[in-house]
Length: 221
Image (cartoon, rainbow, N blue to C red; front, side, top):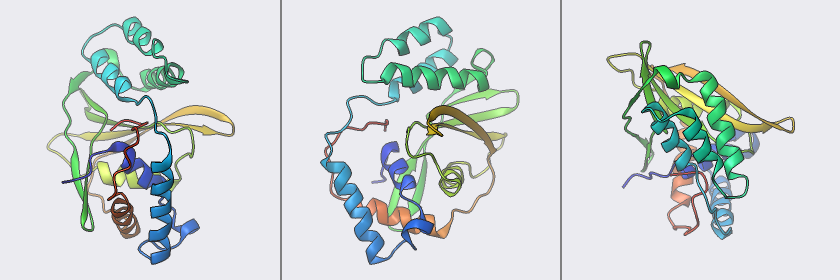
């Protein structure tokens, strides 16, 4: 069965850094990844995730008023939850034409990483006269994505092309220079080849996940 957790995929992406950790696939790198997985599993886990943010975006695309959407997000009680979700939502409002777009269903894409498989899906999608836009949110405060990690996400999701124009919108809400800010980039779907080192890295990362952690999923699934 393919891995389906968005959190696990993003955890793997965050650990992809050959310039710092060396070539993926070595025994040393496998041990490092296993230690990282064990460290995460030992934590108590989160008490909230971002699923309600994505469902609110979908509801807003389907017609619920802005005031109602913001009121719902502001009502969350987890530590920092309301502020984080509301900030991302308001940032997306500046770039996504919620009032003039149509919600569309979007399925996941199953990707093979060596012997491992993962189904990666956008958080929601919408349609305008320009085409279909698939939105994928990276909600972590730290660490901010490096360019090779950012493009690993894009190359995983933004292919192959479809009969009508498709675009991937990558939303980041990381802390840079001591301040969290939203960055939204749009990429055309096209034939893309994933970096061999990334494929090898994710294969090793998913192998390290063979033992279930039993912790909460802080960033959605």
